[in-house]
Image (cartoon, rainbow, N blue to C red):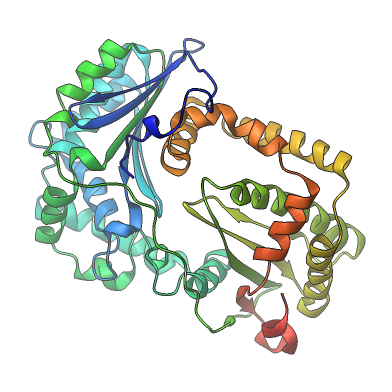
Length: 427
């Protein structure tokens, strides 16, 4: 599926959004949502593919390339880059993910052209000399070495290691200590030359800029990159490890437990249904495990919004056996009993409100449009998001709970003598 997939969805299936348009500049696909309500512009460049473009040996190279570009390009010195961003008040962000890397700028409308020039030049012609790469690598290496000191990060690493065994999602886009130490400046330059191509780029801009202004900005920068032959395709199916539990012994005030199970692919009814089912389960877990039984301060049923989704269970507790037993009962109840339709409608309304409150900034809207473009095949499907959720029925919730909420892969960080013997058999 190419990045440009709008033709695959008819106008009848997507709501009309006159403020948002899509067009190509060269071979770069661009989505523009014009928002005149404020003076802020969010411009995101998505390097599509994410960890599918990486290997265990070069994990982190894309982020390293972008981070090193902060120290200068062939056009702008490090001092010039800093002077422009300071004068304009622009902020440049790097947000790596498993399906893409976001490289974006937040700027005022009046300074969009100069802010974009900095962002784009860092992508098109970064200097990438040995000093720049080494500085960025040392910072990333420090972060990687410190990551597992956080028990939440550690338990996530354990659970994902089992769920994503042998899969591209298992690779850390920010690299590991081993991969970062091995990367050379030649590796980074080679990656830039081979991977930073027009066909891998999706540009999404939300703000008070015109199409003509944006076309000019892209045509003079990103559209001068090599075309490339990349075609977006979702990753292959997950093949979780046979092992059910990974544990890490640590002396902590509480125990951290996280379990994941594979979910459906994006663009399916089950994807939206599981999103709602995990919200239902989260509410029940909070009411039962925290509020009624007082077994935890933190409990939820997470939903990982990716091209291939995952759901799970998370809890921090001093009594793992009791907490997990209570959580299992709530999972079984969701699988065997239909939720109240009136309560479900109320939950969906609340979920939609909360979701859009979390996606109300221009930058968040840009990411929302990007997800719809790649996951649903058309950015215009963003207009159908609320209706898709409202169509989820109690039968849908029960069905996806039965199909997906089992075979969980657990990570455990804490007092491993408290791991219930039955944990590998539960869920």
